[in-house]
Image 1 (tube, rainbow, N blue to C red):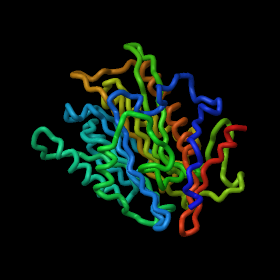
Image 2 (image 1 turned 90 degrees about the vertical axis):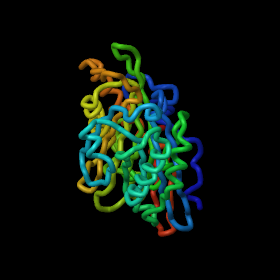
Image 3 (image 1 turned 180 degrees about the horizontal axis):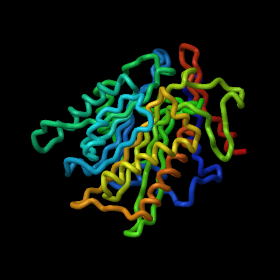
Image 4 (image 1 turned 60 degrees about the horizontal axis):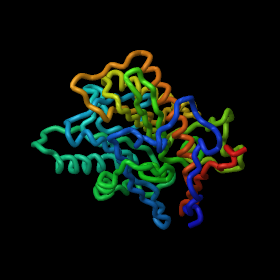
Length: 341
């Protein structure tokens, strides 16, 4: 089907001569630049059945050796089903890999994640907090619960530390954002902290409403003669995941997660009533005593998150491909010419 044909190699914002912020990106400009983190996708695309969904897995390697890594969670708008949120907030610890998928697949994904972790546990486990974020991809995807245990396990088992595919992949396969086809985006920054260089990486599952703001302009699909993608009433969700290789405190990671969600406003997110807007931040390093970042260092991390999320959302839009469903809906990709002019 024409709508699902590749649009060629994904263009990234930096290839247009534009950069967000002053800090340099990591080698891949991806969350996997953070040491000790792997990312995997299972993508479900079926043009005949109208299925556009999937699951994305973020796997901190430290969990193979320790029970949990420090983490922080922040909710801007809670119209969502973020599995595991209350324990994240209460204990500021992450016990499992993080999954991102579609709304009604979240609970099946959580069960599959529990089984996957228990099989690998070195000692008996009597309590476990699976963490699964979700977005509503029902505007594009006709099947509401397409993700199976096998799909979840494939994403977890296939997670790697290489470049992160973006756009119509994994949990972002059926996502629309800011009126265009969207999905997964990722970026990273090298941060010159006082104790030595660090890396901050972000991964965004973009599915929110609003009007895109990029390169100093507001870009609406209607202004380009295109149909707006997404629900006519303000509905959608966005999940921002931040990883860093500094073993800082859970409270500071909460503040980092907050900046991840606030950064969505830079690109035009509406934070509407029907949107679940969530941020999760964790460290891939565990120390006997948490490192408390100085205010100056924390400000650098905040800046890295704000800049990285802004760039990741734009890269998600640039990587996405137009989707035309059997039911007649079209989610147009952002035309690259918008940034080449």
